[in-house]
Length: 384
Image 1 (spheres, rainbow, N blue to C red):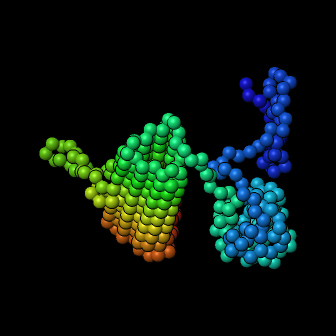
Image 2: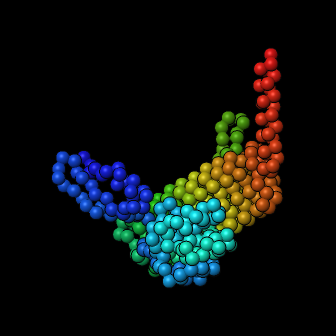
Image 3: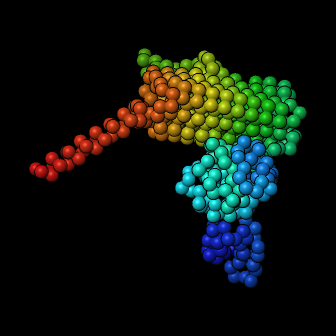
């Protein structure tokens, strides 16, 4: 049987009044006092900074005491002394100022509140907060070395500073760059090239013919370079013949790929993911697709083969893109949108919604018309 803890104590933890719990084991007098609460996260250690150094690093304007030490970032509701919080909208400013946080990042609207708490005034508070977090919570580093259970082909070329975790498999002629980390149970196929400072979480599978640039992050369970979905119908025999899937997959620098994503290699050419692009979990990219630079794609989106997505596009969750569709640079596709095969969606900064996707204003007008027709129908039926 497990140990018990009073629910009131949990409530105090949630309210920030308590950082330790006391457990009582049932049927005994054994008690566990001052059991510490801590979070297991993917950072080696905190890197505390003064408010002044954070202001310099984030290029924000300091108002107040710059000597206060900040150790962590936090939400306003969970903030403790030594934490940094941010306020994007003025309506949340008072809550941030009355919280236990050591300092607040906020917009120009907060300048008149100087003196109550150290403030970092930023044009884009959320961005400044993210940059501060990168300084306070540096990415995890790994001790260099190859675990004894890893299986590495003699012809594979590994930089001297790599980290290879247990049960990873690296096939012939693969190339692993400096300071790269290959997580437990990863499979790196023949001839795969992985650039410097890449970080592969456990059980990533990379098929032959795949190249990763520098500082690529691939989360657990992702499959890169698998066969595309290409089959030709044989009408005579009533079955499908597989179309050759012998192309490549090229992933640019600073790309981040979420857990359980799948990206197919090209059929005869290349599938390309441009530099700086970020994929959420459970995104599928079909063969021969070209995704530009600094594109963001949210979870459960499916991109059919030979689609082109331009630089800086934003694709919401559960979007479906038909084959050979073109999403021009800067387009924003709302969640659940659909784009038909061979269609072109253009308009930098324009938000599209619906199935098929159309400009948001047009989509909303269509919904309003349908609502009026539904009400009219109900009124007519009620008058009979």
